Length: 151
Image (tube, rainbow, N blue to C red):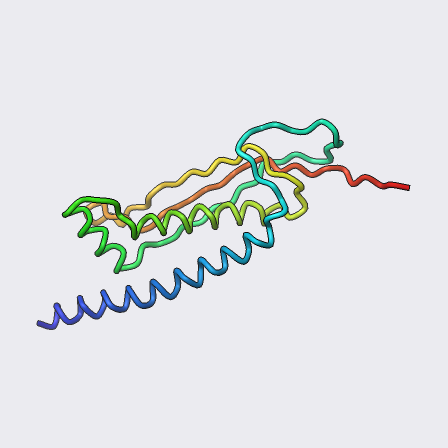
């Protein structure tokens, strides 16, 4: 009986705290995305030739987001019954968006980010190969143009 109560306690705790932390993280991501919106990020490597380039450099941003107990429980149910694991979809979304933001923040003077790539991978807990977290890595070429001084 005690193990059932402990399990239910962890389940409720994982749901409440996980939901709270996830909503705060999404709010932070949204706010930072709005601040960084004017700097374009493109997934191709076209560089306009009408402006002189001061600097080109590879920039990266990475993040590891862990899976809470509640999401792990829901994913286990989905694995048993089948279907989309919606609890992991939001986890991967948060990780990708955070990685792109960290990449942008690694070069705040950039005018443009070219050839954006985002890679994700699962990190295993070791037990029955269950997912312990998700890593996302974003990388691109940061372009800094020469400041044009006009008379």
